[in-house]
Length: 336
Image (cartoon, rainbow, N blue to C red):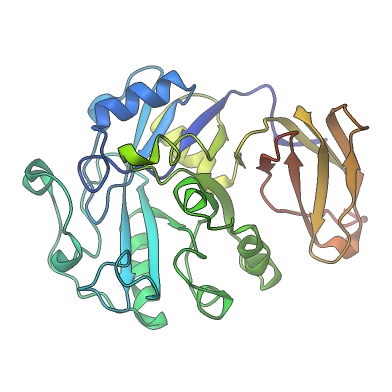
């Protein structure tokens, strides 16, 4: 039996997309730590717009700050995508694999219109870079991100007005956001279909849910604590957490918990918190679901796989319509 998610190891709750006063967020990093720890989070990736500002001084035995930034490439760089709302954009989060790596990659000053003076005083970059919105230009940036030691998330594709004709040409993405709390607040649907698009075209990525929180007062907290990942790692240590993210040892959620995921031969079993249904998604049309009886709930499901499925993932839905998502896994061939 292989443990895809191991109940004997801790799960660390993490928000991988967060903005603070160092760009267009309203909470200080210290306030972010306080609020997220109170909600049971152990990890926050600080991804302020356009520049890396490390918040590693916030680390303690129960909290880890991942070093990162959110980087945009726009059709018209001089115009805000919030003002020209029909403009396509591409947003990536970059996460430093080494916490001492604080050099902002592909930095272009005309994009960086955010933050307090302290952010610019602490900014480190290795020369001005001219971003190009073409597929070639974006792939060149992705190549640089990887060469400079970053993991890369492709953020909120639907909000960005991008579709498969563009994002399937991107090379070097590690994660795709399939749920974004801030976008959901503004009535954007989730991007679960994007995950399937990648895999049906032979591109392996891991899925995340994240907040993209700005904590703007008139949103009354509705862009925070809505989406997260739970990272299955031996300990709360920067290298351990990055390694687990690289391997896909985590699940994404907007509510339900996943306690274990195991596979033996071509039989997969999942154990969860209370759910109204648990469904298996494959490469093809086969998508069986285990339902709870009316008024009840289930906490596990077992599915038989087939060579024809090619790969599988599992989606858990609770009584409130909130969902948890496993990663996508290859189906072991019967002869294996």
